[in-house]
View 1 (cartoon, rainbow, N blue to C red):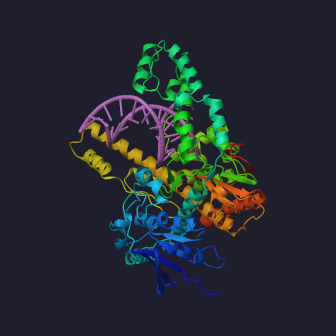
View 2: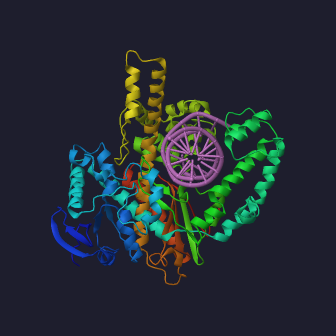
Length: 582
DNA sequence: TCTACAGGCGCG
DNA sequence: AAAGCGCGCCTGTAGA
């Protein structure tokens, strides 16, 4: 077997594609050009999943290059996404110096406001548009610019305080970028009939010509009767609020939690009405028609779309699918789903980061909240949960805030980690996750506020405003380290699952899952990811092997991030025809 | 008539 | 039951 090049850098050159092979020391060992439309075939032959081939494709943006390869019928094992890695390295406190990399350049395009602006661009990203990023701006595509950025990134890595962690983060982030494209290509198996049945059960029959569903009409009539106004408008917040005031419900808002405080005959049907209209508008027949008309829901995932490193999504609300609709997520005939989520991912990650053996003990082999109760820290699981969430989110009032001190006494190391992160953010500093993703610095506006408050002629209001902004930022950085590190653990888990699934043979006996596309129609593949949960769509015959892969990848992720520290990440895992089963 | 924003609620 | 992190999407309204 010939030794594969370590890096294979790919870029555009007019109508052609340039591929430059680099060895371990980043010296150029080969350079070829092919017509742009021939490149995907080349990639599938030379960079595909071949045993022993450790080629890592280097490119400006996975969302541009990879869908072409998938469309050509191939999967790529590894890549280095310069856009995503640039964003990490630019901000990371683990990177020393690297002024050239940190200088504002077009490599910053799309990294900041991906979530905000991707919606308009996204629908075409995977089909037509060759150069747009999720941010809408063009990234450098020229081979010299691409090579230069790659070398800047490798130099930054080389001088980092903890290159091993950062390297792991960049690899995981890039693997995530590949997976995001694959998830879109494969789609989430979606049974139209099941979705329609749920809609009919909950909302009633669809009104004539897209009119108001019957159940919504009925419940609306009950609400209007209780409001003593047959013409009351229930869908306009200001009008509804006025109607409520007329009958003595003096709420400040029409939000569910506030309305629930009032004891009045209108409340129950009104809450029901809001629930029904929400389902109808967010995931009703129109959604089904637009997003899952033919057996698959294909959202656009946006890796790195959240500042903490979590993924965002664009189109169809992939990360907000109501649990009520979960039964519509249903394997194809002859296939099954492996659904797995991590129990209490964030507090487990916190225990490991802080090296808190007491918290790790409470978490071992059981529900972490039960473990906290067993230690005698608090008396019920519900209290343990609300206290832990309060500690990680920065609660100061209510039951949550009241319970946090007990946690602080029992788990001083873990609590010190989040408390310190809050203090740093409060002071205007930057915090960093376990693998090296750093929070953004305070905004210009934030610094202005603090500056005004420290002026000698600062008003009481100036100081109050600045203090509030300061505490808000403290809560953000407090949560950033935990949420961000949890996202890193999840990426490592995903990357492990993905790699192991690629090693599974195709399943010739299974009926082809045609809607998953040629690449995935005969092999187990990931089809959903939601922060701490994954779903694999697999030929039924491979389900047990897939379950083992999913479990084993979780153990590997724990070891990759936290070495020998004794923390475990138990999975709730089930092999099931549909994702609705508890 | 078009766009921007706020309210509200779905998910972790 | 609610306050405390991170998101995206839908609706109605306010403002240009």
